Length: 276
Image (cartoon, rainbow, N blue to C red; front, top):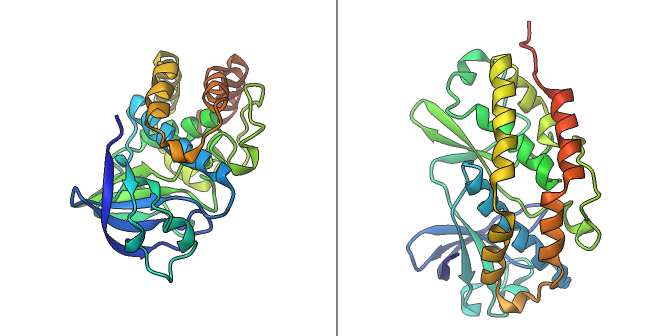
């Protein structure tokens, strides 16, 4: 079950090109980044469902992620200066991602070419896994110009955590058309980025192949139907999600055609040889 909480304190709005989430404190005394609607298009609610599914899948794949919750936003909590405040003032049930302390956002300005920096990375192998996850779910919003990764800092060690998965299954523009015949693509994906090359090229060749093989094996063990049933049982009725969405997502994730195209990309991208 995904917990349902109530926001008790508004901290600020985070300006982004996407949902411009609110940072709030909930009644469990924890801070959450919460997303709702950015427009009058109710289809956007599907992107909140995508966020819910992504967290469940990341956990199934033993990848780090922030805890999630559904957050009731009392209308009186939202100040007038908040973008799309009318939407927030509709007694909204929003999706929330728990704040990870001591974390910073990764940008193009970050460089991981230095061996000393690489040695500080606690979960370098997860960069391979996250990149393959993005291929599988067709995440259109983790790329060279927007990594949607945060670094959790713990003394001299750093750990990558993937965030923001509202653009999986092709994102907003493909909500009504994505299907199991859409083959995987490496274009504008993490696997084609400088960050991926800089980090993965320092991982031994045999280990790169081992990590990717084990990841593909783990994919085949996930009970997709159970994951989706769990998510869809928790979706607020007010989101009015199309009844066909769950079936389309299930077929998409289980598609042999997509898995075959994913394997072809992996074979063309890995292993990455060390830089001289």
